[in-house]
Length: 483
Image (tube, rainbow, N blue to C red; front, side):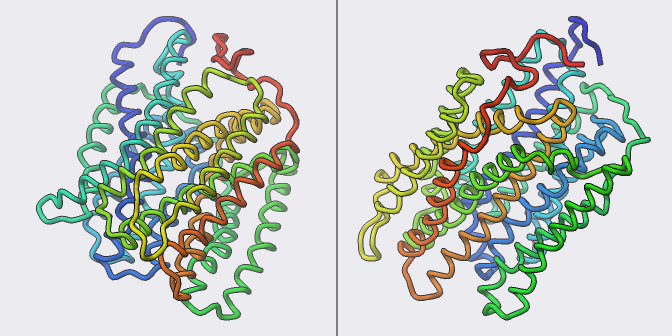
C-alpha cells in the first residue's frame, strides 16, 4: 500500500473485478424477491418457509459481516475477498440445484456467509489499488454499482424466470452467478495486489455465538409462530432473547476490560448517540426487504402478474433510490437531520398512498397507479440513507469509526430480517384469517408507515453531527490521505 501518486498497472481491471463481485451480491438480494412466488409454487412451501429464503440470507450476512472484516485483517484482504466470492458462487450453484426448500434455505445461509466475507474487503482494497487522487472516483463507482443493482435486479429476475431457460424455471436466477463469480475470482487473482494480514489478531467467537443465539431466539418465533399455532414455548423463546442480548453486552464489556477482541467495541455500545442512530437505521431498513417480499406475492399470486411484470412494477422505487442518492451525494454533510426526517416522511406518504391505492378483491389492478407512491418512497429512502449513516458515524470517536461502520451495516441487515419476520406475520396472518391479498398487503403496510414515522420523529434526538472523518465541508472526500 502506497500513498504516492504512482498509478498501479491494471488497477481499473482489478476495480472491475471488485465491482462485479459486489454487483453480483447486491443484485442477488433484489432478484430473489421477484422469484418468491415461483419458489413457493415449485416447492409447495409454507409461508414461513418462503420467509426463511429471504431472512436466512440477510441474517447470516449480518452475523458474519463484522468477523469477516476482521478476518480480512488476519489472513489478507485479497485472500479473504477471493474466498468470499468462491463461497458465494458455490452457494449460488447449490441454490440453483436445490432439490427442496430446506436445501435452498441452507444454501442461502451459505450465500450470506460468502457475501459477508467479500463485502468488507472491496472498499478496504481501494487504497491498495489507487493513489489518493483517484480514490474519490473509485469509491463513487461503488455507489453507482449499488444503484444499478437495485434497478436491474427485479427486471433481470423476472426476465430469467419468464424465459424458462432449458425448462429450469426460477433456477437461472442463482446459476447466472457462476460465470460472474469465476470472472471476479480470475480478475482478482491476476490484478488485485496481495495485502498481508496480521495473524496476531483474534476473533470474538463467544460474542458471535451470543449475538447469533439472541437473534435466532427472536426471529424464529416471529417467522414460525403463526405456522405452529403460537404455543407457549414460542413466547418463552422471544422472552429468552432479552437476557441473551444483555449477556452479549456484558460480554463485550468484559472483553474490553481485558483488552480482548470484541465483536462490537464496548465503547460503541456505551455511546448513546451511536446506539440511538443504529436503532433508527434498524427501523428504517426493517421496512424494505419485507415490503418487497409481500408485494411480490400480492402482485403475482394475488393478481396473476408474471415475474417480469412484477419486477417492472417495482422499478419506480429503485429509480427513486438511485436518483435521490445521486442528489444526496452532492449535498454532502449539509442539513443531515432535516434530510433524514424529510426522507422518512416521504416514505410514510409513499406507503400510505400505496395502501389507499390497493384495489379491492373484485377490482382490477392498475400498475400505473403504483408508479407515483413507489417512486416517492424510493426518493425518500435515497434521501435518508446517506445522511443517516453520516450522522451516526460522525458522533463516533475516530478510533471506532471502522468498527462503527461495520456494526451499522450489520444493524441494517438485522433490521431487514426483523422486517421480513414482522411483515410476513402481518401479511400471511391476514390471509390465513380469511382476508384477501389486498387486505393482507394493507395490514402489512401499517408496519412500514409506523417504522418510517418513528424514524422521522426520533431523528431529532441525535445531535447535529460534526464533519465525517475523511470528508471536507461539502461532503467530498478529503484529499489528505488517512493515516
